[in-house]
Amino acid sequence: MAAPRKAYACDPDHSRGRRFAEPASTTRSPFRRDCDRVIHSTAFRRLKHKTQVFVFHEGDHYRTRLTHTLEVAQIARALARQLGLDEDLTEALALAHDLGHPPFGHAGERALDECLKAHGGFDHNAQTLRVVTSLEHRYPDFDGLNLTWETLEGIVKHNGPLTDADGAPIGRYAVTGLPYGISEFDQHFGLVLSSHASLEAQCAAIADDIAYDAHDIDDGLRAGLFSVNDLKVMPRTAEMIADIDARYPALDEGRRGAELVRELISFLIADVFAEANRRLADVRPGSVDEVRFHDSVLIAFSPAAEEAEAMIKTFLRERMYRAPRVMLVMSEAASVVRDLFARYSISPGDLPAEWRPTIETAVNDTDQARLIGNFIAGMTDRYALTEHGRLFDSTPDLR
Image 1 (cartoon, rainbow, N blue to C red):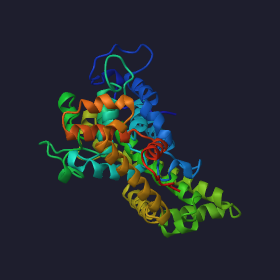
Image 2 (cartoon, one colour):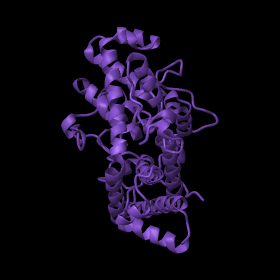
Image 3 (cartoon, one colour):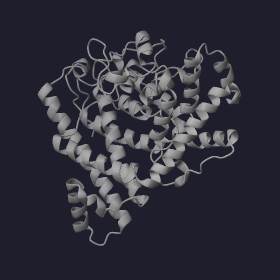
Image 4 (cartoon, rainbow, N blue to C red):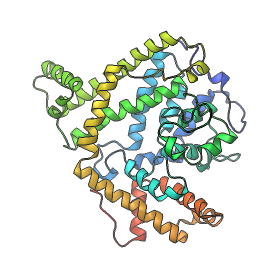
């Protein structure tokens, strides 16, 4: 049963609106409309063939960006429902959070960032903002999806505030500066970059962590990169495995791993729910703005779960993301991105016909590089390999 809507939840009837005014829907709230627009976008469909960890043709059972996104949405909605938040806004943010990812996962992102280093770099959260504000071309009156202020805020602040109160970049952006395009958009439709996002956005962000911790364990087990018993090196998962073995002493390895993943998801969701309730009871925010300007996030892991979750990330980094097999495939995938960027930069005529007029209007090298970056970022793994095969004599097999 859903909890009653709380005073600190985002209220669709009091949204700060859209950049381009539109008539209200008679059947859907503004946030439900945002959610539906994301689902029907071209960028959302392309997530089906974008890498999570394993390239799409390594097997049909591994997660893609799309299945990861759906799992994030399910966890985020579960949290929002129990906390009395707006489920539609939470779902919209979960479904949109990875729309800006390029092909080949983080390897593709690093390669594209390297290619665009002299032109502002590449950041997938900033690219998501570009997708939903300019790169989708589905409506007659505007580019992008014209999402509500609250959804755009949550997209940009997926990792928290970007600046201090004086506008200086903070955290990961303190050295590099704000990602390309965010400052420019903020001048037109200010997103208050110094504040935290809504609780709905915080739910979507922590659901992202829960989902990939759990499903990367599942995929790593399926790929044979480690066994269930290998996960006993961490106290929390060791306890869960011991409990599973006590209840099901004859369980096969596949079901044993699946049961562990379920237990882990349930543990992390329950922990976030308890910790969020504790923090909300202490702070007692009376509005969403009190949430935004509180000095820390209110949707978080408890200290004990945070430690356990950090151990899981460390384990996955060492045993999965840096596994020789995965590293080899991702290295070759990164070379595909670099090759494509270099080729289009030298020979823009090799771009598809619909992109050539846009490139021809570029006023300088940075404009041209950013347009090429947008094109590559929108590629699926499959299309990137097809394009590479069209333009080069030899293309990596990525297996």
